[in-house]
Length: 203
Image (cartoon, rainbow, N blue to C red; front, side, top):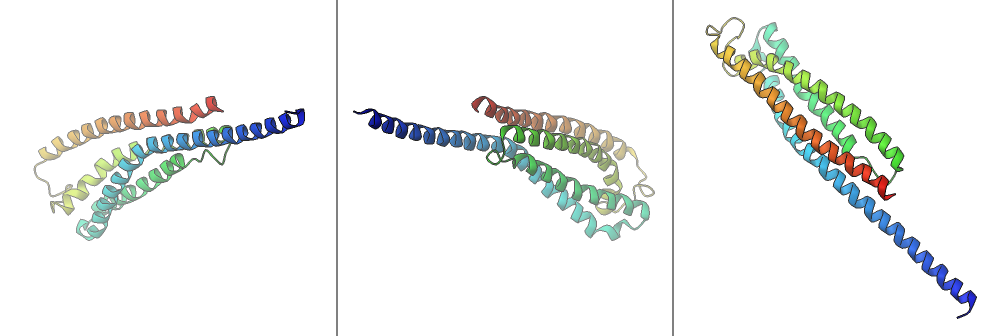
């Protein structure tokens, strides 16, 4: 085989190897993207379920707003409905930003910058959600009492013992549930970030 033929064959083999490398890199990115999204789906699905519940309660309040009658019952009702409608929307939007990060369109550096920025926004929103949800416990009590029980909690409840039992139980449940949710979310976020950072080693 002459030198020119050998160079031609080698050039062809090099081209095929380069194509194979690009295809392999693309497959790695596709698999990494899929693994990353699966981790975020473990957060997305509970959030969607929670959103359905929040929207249902908000609609129930708004449809029965006339039953609240007095301003001191209507105000907590409106505030409760706003929290129940707004928080899930912002939460889902934030999660969508995180799970929708595209590994193909950006360099690893740009992807990591975008991820870090969105993660900070998501964590800030989670903190705000925690405090607003805690406030919601107190706001929704008189609303529930009036709509479901037909009693004005401020003037019509003679026996205060049920409230004294329900409020501490509600707060205790909320604190434990919030800690459990934070732990589960944190685990999946850390694993998603680990998957993202694995791309650096493969570049």
